[in-house]
Image (cartoon, rainbow, N blue to C red; front, side):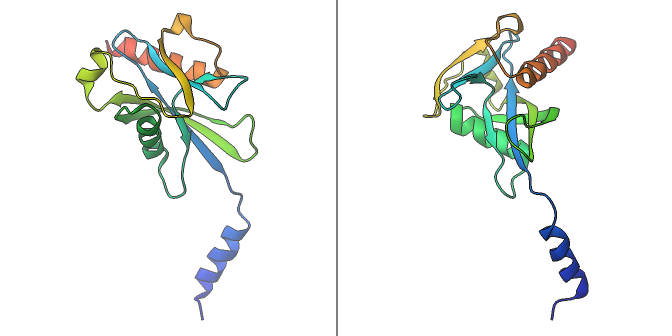
Amino acid sequence: MPHIAVVMQRVYRRFQGRFTVGAVGVLLNAAGEVLLVEHVLHPRQPWGLPGGWVSRNELPQKAVEREFHEETGLGVRVTHPLDIWPGQHWRNHIDMAFAVEMVDTEQLNSAPQIRLSGEFLSYQWASLDSLPALFPEHRHVISLAVKQQQRNA
């Protein structure tokens, strides 16, 4: 027979809300340009930051690193969180953004070799003043990352 605490935890968890989590990464090159990808499955707003859904039992930071590699072939590591916001199109969903850097920093200065997955049509490096139409949250976290890069320069 399970201990009363175990039973109480199971009952408590049964009635707690479930959330999905999305995580994106902001990768800036030395010129302060951000890597953007053009999504196949987002026809109304195709351009955005690389990232995706956080899998069960996966940390959001690891999801960003995994998604970056799967989507672009680039190895990145999360340096710090940028922002979190409620999802606009999904109930019980939150999105998170992280600043990322290349694992091989020399590659970032010499045009990294990007291999897009089938989820994307193309990619571009864009400066803050030449961004295509983006979700406002993506635009916001890009500006946060650019400002931080400028302060650290």
